[in-house]
Image (cartoon, rainbow, N blue to C red):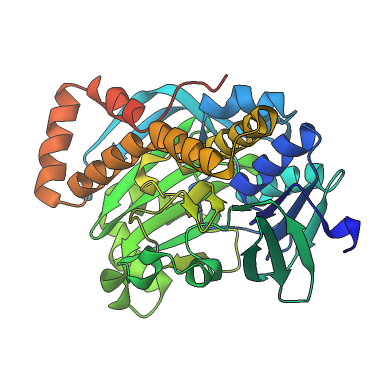
Length: 374
């Protein structure tokens, strides 16, 4: 068997979680293969806001997002679909950066030391405590461990026969960049009938606009433009933004069948990180930070397991435990917040309460975020 086809870890998926995991393990001397189906750079449907909780960890990997022009964000605005709003300080703050720039920045770092294949994975076989991974173009590789970092929903979910993939979900998301009026330090979340829309600045003074909507609501309209004019513009804050904004993209990018159902953190011995392991509701604004932290959790567990000679079973149990300790409560709070936000009566009542007691907002935000990662 050719030695150059053997790796310590194969990572399937080159988004934030996969790239961060690759950089962490590579820096500790591990031989890594990263397989990603899309070329870099590329735009992805994403809120593009990252909590500052990950900055200390990124620094240990030699990553400084502000070198790319990331925007420092310390204010949060929330509005109902009728336009009633409140603005508060973010308890920890964060930064805005596009996936187009940030993923490519991480990719350029990893290709300096490790192999990256731009291709789709065809199948993953686990035989005699060893994985064999094959791609559509005929590449293959061996490793004792595989990390699944392929996002919210992918072909490998079908291949692994994951339960959530068999259930249809009512959500789709749409994203584009605009030139428009928005303070650099503000992330805004505006409700509309059937969904919510996030706005935040990223590098090059672009405004990332990303919204989630129930599929049934969207189907009633001919296209994205007519949906936005008829539904999003009912919120006066969104109407004001779009009235002077101009889209930079040739066309928005979209993703459907977004699942918030429970997922396993280890599936047929494949370690899931990022959205592959569990997806927090985007209105919480913490998915990117959670993907980065999940990469750290796996990397730390893997390196400890190697040092202390853990069994595969012990590593799988430890990773699952640590992942749930870090994220399960955040996911529950996120689901509760979404149910409130999408109920018009509950949203109006909650907004009135929060306007009279605005200090409650940072406390709620803190429940879906973590502390700075050492």
